Length: 385
Ligand SMILES: Cc1cc2nc3c(=O)[nH]c(=O)nc-3n(C[C@H](O)[C@H](O)[C@H](O)COP(=O)(O)OP(=O)(O)OC[C@H]3O[C@@H](n4cnc5c(N)ncnc54)[C@H](O)[C@@H]3O)c2cc1C
View 1 (cartoon, rainbow, N blue to C red):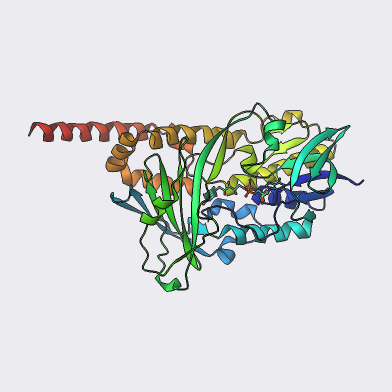
View 2 (view 1 turned 120 degrees about the vertical axis):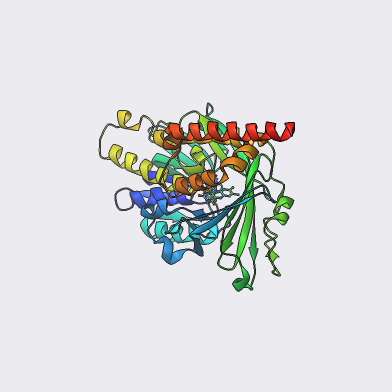
């Protein structure tokens, strides 16, 4: 039986990014459960920060893009409009985005679609990958199988993930001229999370995520952005509840098995952005494996190849916990600093700032303190009068 250098489980952004990095430099097999194109629950909002990680350009391939967004507190709250000179979000239906990447991966490495991996067993000095019908051998394994791959629990029993519940519904319409091209974010709707409206070429999608243990009730999306359209829901997916896993503690490597993307729990806990981190992690893991295949000892190098992402995620988690977990605080901040917060969000997704810089900036705390004093002073004056 052929022994591959690397077997990749999963052909989403993380798996394809790894495949493209390894192409021509190692013997690689990618196993994907579904035949592509396949549906993936996702807003399909892609930030310009991923442009250097893709084999195609965002501007030429996206459904649509935005230089303007509306950020609202709850459904009826004040509206904050943020604008940027360059597009700050590109929108795709994920089946098409993933299929474009997958086509590149198919040209670069061996790929088998419709092949579900059911177990990974260490066997002598390599790994046996068991599928429903075949088994394969590899020296390295990259698990890029998304949020629900059960074998992770067996291989990384100490890993603790926090699971966000996130859902979305895709809508299709022929009345494309009437579709608003401005994305809308509703913070605090539902109360412990957020929801969004994202435009697409032939329709739009609505979705949301909640922080904590509850699930997103798909009916809440009916209240978002009333469109004057004879819209058609994609009923195949409307009852789906998905998770965005965030790795709280644990590791992303065990011997020669690596976790990437959602399997490694790398999505941003505050914004739910995961595509960028899936692409980065696939690429970095592949580079590390290539070094090891060339005989470079990487024990030191590995340490934690996602250290920077996980540190940022820790800060994002803290912010999400306080922001979404305390509705009064969220309401106060949106009322007093809605503009600044909306602008910070824009700066985060375009890479002008990051969580560390945001939290390190003492001026931000003073601003909050000043605003709180003014706010509560006015409130107490009103109650006296
Ligand atoms: C509702 C929702 C909205 C989101 N919105 C956004 C957004 O707007 N922007 C953003 O950046 N991120 C968003 N995310 C997060 C983003 O979707 C994920 O972080 C990203 O898809 C992770 O990529 P991945 O390659 O790790 O996993 P996936 O994209 O899940 O790919 C995993 C692949 O592995 C395959 N697979 C699974 N099991 C097996 C198996 N046993 N054998 C073989 N193959 C297998 C799957 O079929 C799939 O193709 C959203 C997530 C959700 C749930």
